[in-house]
Amino acid sequence: MVKYDAIIIEDSPAVCIRLKEFLQKLDFAKIHVAKNGNDGISAFKEYLESSATPIVFLDYNLPDMDGLSVIAQILDVRPETRVILQTAREKSDEKVREVISYGAYKYLAKPYGFDDVREIINAIAREDEQLGDATKDFEIIRAFLKSHTRVSMAMLTDYTGKKKSDIVTILDDLQKTGAIVKSGSVREISCEKCGTVRVKQFFNCPSCFSYNFKKETVIEHYSCGNISAQRTYKNEQCPECRGLIKMLGVDYRVLENFYVCNDCGDKFPELHWDFRCLHCNNKFGIDQAVWRESTDYKIISV
Ligand SMILES: [Zn+2]
Ligand SMILES: [Zn+2]
Ligand SMILES: [Zn+2]
Image (cartoon, rainbow, N blue to C red; front, side, top):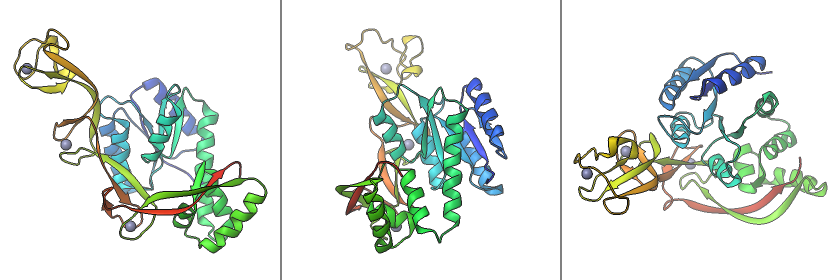
């Protein structure tokens, strides 16, 4: 089996120790532990200079930045990085899908055990082995299907590099056995320059386009107009005018789920987003995106 390196970005020491033990049992080579997003990202950049891309285990709730922000900053440097996101089990399925669509490779629900981690690492190892053996079309397609719940023809051609005519025969066989089911057609965003659907969505600050941001609850002080994170209002005092905030709705309001940029300090309710082509590295906005239509397949069991 291939030996992997790992970076654990997690602020809970207990979770770190357990995960590190699991990874040691799975024969990982280098394992780095980072307590926050910043440390994790610098460690990631150092790894890239000296060794192969590490697998990143990321806690969604970090003290210094949002999980999404860490994913964006890592994928910005190395788009093919596998980021395994750890978050609480009660998070809804929709949340998970959202996070996966932001570029996380897999999702690990806390609390998790050794077998859960091993399963993910085995899947990665299988994918890597099959990518190495380019002659076995069927195995390549199957490995790709295994790590998805649905795929489109465009995804299959663009991610595997196989011709549509070759893929169709394989998919026909898989349909006959009930392993996959055709489910109409789907429109997907593709690169305006090279046409591939191998694109990733990136979220950033609408003012300075930095990927370094954090989700926060912010307070708006009506009389002076200051908007800043709740934690900056120490002892109920506005950090801008030093006035006291007294009555909710009368002299201040609380805005949940705001984002605060760690670089320029701007606050905003919605993140800006754009796309990055994993093939030609073109960066483009939704307005420039080209929608590509192709057949969609639901994966039952392969
Ligand atoms: Zn492109
Ligand atoms: Zn004020
Ligand atoms: Zn900014």
